[in-house]
Length: 147
Image (tube, rainbow, N blue to C red; front, side):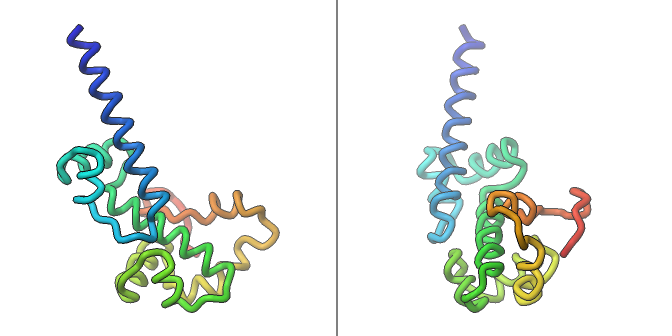
């Protein structure tokens, strides 16, 4: 029975982590922090960060920033919004921080991406474009070329 209770606890933790990830996916444009995510999952912030990283390969904050940058890339490809408007639309509170994170993940600043990003996905269905343009942390390790 001890193995069963350990398995049950692990399953409950995985469900809680999935709910945190789903919440980030849903509420990426809202002000989210690890403490509030952890509180919603009934975990300490440190425990959530460790377990989330173990389960998904990146911290909750990194996952949130990846979601925000991914959405920003789509808005920039679509056009019609300034970079500042895109920053605030995806939940950024500082244009400087947004631009820095965007550049880290995408390899080029938002202004360069806006100029060249749309051409990258011309004629592609949106679901394929999303996969092709998904920002990847540590591009060198992933072997993905920058724009």
